[in-house]
Length: 338
Image 1 (cartoon, rainbow, N blue to C red):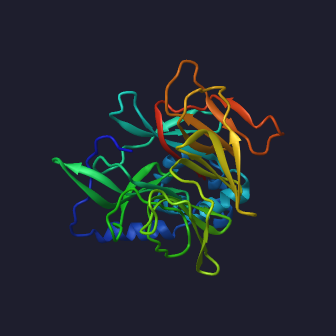
Image 2: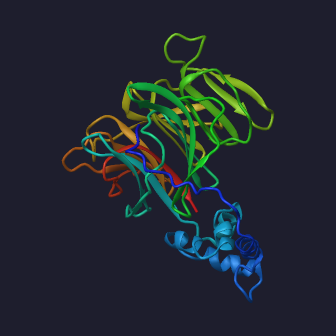
Image 3: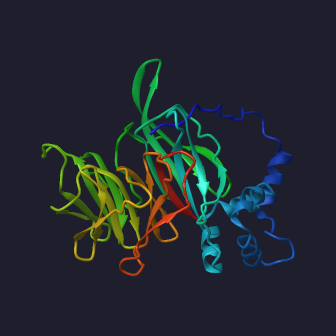
């Protein structure tokens, strides 16, 4: 995976602070959200605004911007029942030279392109969603013919439509596994993937010091007991994976016309054939939208349609085609609900 050419980061220069300006900033943050209304009522009013208007709202004042960036904002929108789910897809053009992030809603309508992410061209980076924000971490870049691992971390705020640079990771790395958990973890393995499922962290695939070739063992971390355990029936050489509901969906390199579905309740796997309808090729990337699994083909074909798998549909009706399709080849995707 790679990014297009970097853009220049505009970093404000330091200088003597203006006491009057500092006073205005403090007053702005301490002022009512909406004059004349209790803050809880005002926050509810702001939460009802459609998601596409958030960047404009963030430019009104620092108080609004601070609220829009907070976890509280997502909680208020959830209580109001107005959360909107958007799919963020990193796509590659037909010449395989440039990539960009684009945003699709549940109807497949393209909302916008994300601003270009700062930093150099990279591959092998990690992507995760945390508190409604997209984090792109580490990776491998080449500068003047010399390759090196990166420790950079960039954050995209989906409410304000802007990138910012976070603190670097302690160790520069690429081709690693990452997932959202509330613990500090360390487990020796590379070339693997990780996912959070039912309060546990699952790490599978990749290699370790104790295996020849790709490992079939699954490391499972219990965040309540702070312990690791092991399963012996994992997938190997996984080319795509996604968590939908309470199950993990995988596709293995050796069998890309079947879905492998993992149920953590009994640690069982179920194989589901992928129909030829929509795409007869092999090789897919996954997306999650509106409680359904999207399969984006890695090969452009005449009449190609995105495959859609609905795990809650009646038996025999799980598979359909969908008009939701990125403008280029899908490198990866994440779903952000705000």
